[in-house]
Amino acid sequence: MKVNIHGKGIKVGDQLQQRIEEKLGKFNRFFGDDAVANVKVRPDGDLKVIEVTLKIQKHYYRAECAADDIFTALDEAVEVLEGQFRKHKTRMEKKIHDYAYMKEYLLTEVPLPAETEDEMQIIRRKTFDLAPMDAEEAVLQMETLGHSFLLFLDMETEKVCAVYKRKDGHYGLIEPNY
Image (tube, rainbow, N blue to C red; front, side, top):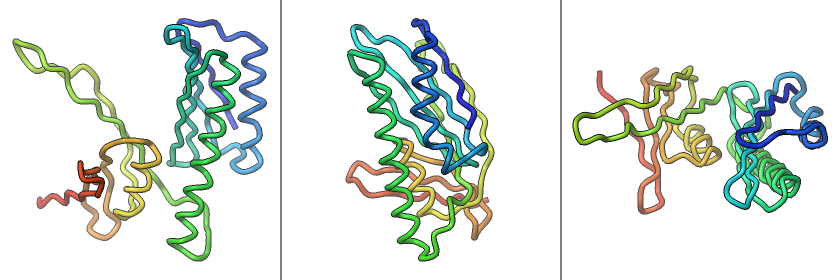
């Protein structure tokens, strides 16, 4: 597993870097060289925040934890990731009896454009590869990432679709006609 560590407003020392690599190293036996971990460390007032994003094939897992001590935040983030792995594995086992590791997944995080008094401005642009999946897999990916919507390529219709979380707690599916 490749581990990229970045400090934003905080210096990542050798001890912290070694501890991060050690904690994330335990996922090596499951994912090997296929996985890439991006770790961001930053202060937030009196708290230390650590954000870990794991990319395995086209599937992403993300955990962000804050604590007084950076090592405590790291431990909490690793626990969150482990919980996401277990949850996803259980869901996949229910969906297909024969558990085969995750199909192609898609991550998207499209921020809303900032609104100004004079004109609308796009302040951030993000690109991503569309991966074929069904609506259930898209909902699972969206929930895993904690997003409110997700764009995906429908395997059956080969059209770009979107799933979103409704205010009533259920999910919606947008299928365009073109």
